[in-house]
Length: 366
Image 1 (cartoon, helix red, strand yellow):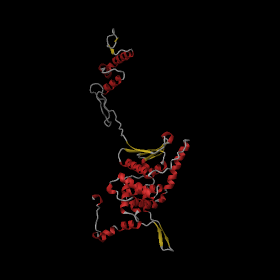
Image 2 (image 1 turned 30 degrees about the vertical axis):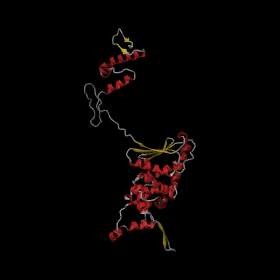
Image 3 (image 1 turned 90 degrees about the horizontal axis):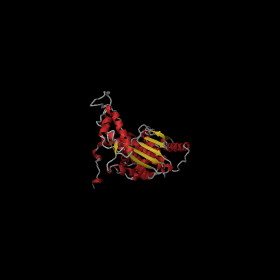
Image 4 (image 1 turned 60 degrees about the vertical axis):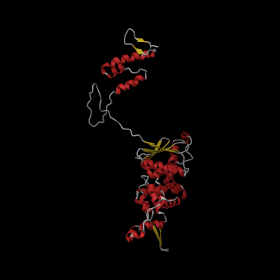
């Protein structure tokens, strides 16, 4: 029962001042016939994405626009009312991201399927206490938002991406896959949205999407949401590269990828740091002067350990005398002579070296 309890308040206690401050919001939500819970949930979903690129720079203006045309004969006006429910999404980054999601979903799926995708995404990736809207309520908000920003031309942008992909395959003299424009399933779209969100929000996480099936819709979604975070390559040729690469879309022909089925995965980026060797040991604790601004480190016994590993490849174990000669600049010549005799002896089936010049090598004792 605790999950069904919600906070309530008596409107009568707010007074006229309290009601007047909420008048715009209540009027917009009631006039547009959308559920406040659905609006808040969609805004929370949008806050899980960081939008950037061409569409992100104009979405705020599109959400706030309120053009209307007066019909004098009927004494009324048609168009978008100023301060409607959709324009409220422009006041937050999460609302703007949610509007771009609505643009993609309603131009790709029907009314109910678009709401079902967001519902599945909410159930998988958001706290249950914030998933209160139904599929129908989410779909109604998506339809209203996408209708207002339809002038952004999502269909034309999708056609541009399909044409770009086709031209690349024509230049490579390869057959164009027939599955470019296949529609993804609801489950697949929800999982891809989860990959995008996690790659943007989690430090060191990268998303990699590979294949050809439905790749035109995936590419358009990525470029609409976060063009600066995406790198797109077709058969190894990069056709789009953002400044902050977190999501990698690799379009690979079915011949080299077996079936062309889309595959996506999350990867962890390993940070490689470069170290400068600033402390050089020469002799007994002798340090060569280096610049103060260089990063330095020392490893005592590195040369001996390295030589031990190299001698192990020739089955020469624990040759401390040889390692000592190699580490000493005055014993290099002696070390070369010993190593040469050891290798020659190894080639003739002899395992140990006797320094006596008369006996030379002696066979391994059995």
